[in-house]
Image 1 (spheres, rainbow, N blue to C red):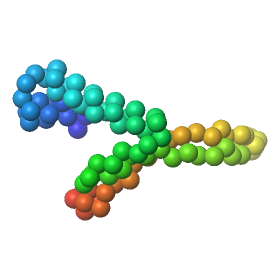
Image 2 (tube, helix red, strand yellow; image 1 turned 180 degrees about the vertical axis):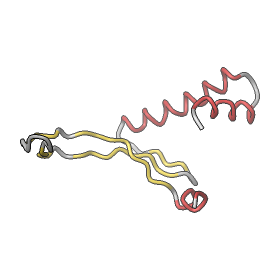
Image 3 (tube, rainbow, N blue to C red; image 1 turned 45 degrees about the vertical axis):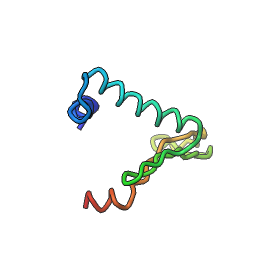
Image 4 (cartoon, one colour; image 1 turned 135 degrees about the vertical axis):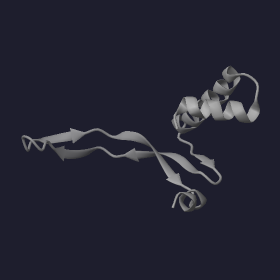
Length: 90
């Protein structure tokens, strides 16, 4: 399933126009991203938790040359699936 298929599904459920359904899907995605940017987590019952993980700066090694390389700190979005979601997919 991609974004367009999700828009089609929402359109089938709520009716109205496809433009309105796309606005709903886009709005949901924007809200999740905006909340994660603030450093907060998004918890959706039965689905899981979206959160941001901070990775510390560290030293790595270039596998080709063996040279030590500094790897900068970064933030990465993560997802932890809910038990109900995991059980449904099994």
